[in-house]
Image (cartoon, rainbow, N blue to C red):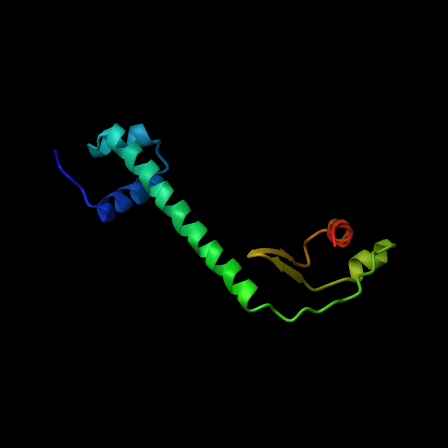
Length: 122
């Protein structure tokens, strides 16, 4: 039985995902033990999740230690179709490492509802 390094398993997992084949089908075709592959998939997902959580926690800590300048802008809810069409640009809202970005294609009425909810929460 061949022992593979973590880097080798990572490469095999990437190859399987890129193939578009199911895990069992890919393993059978490539001579990989299916149980071993599933064990490695679980292991690598846990590592990716842990790494992602660490990055998120670091961003949250940075935001708390270095608060951004707060700018308040008055938002007017569009009342006519022309108001909706004429509004262009984008808005970015970041809270605790989570970012909402609404560009020109984001429905203005949905953004207005979101802003109303944010006002109600504050």
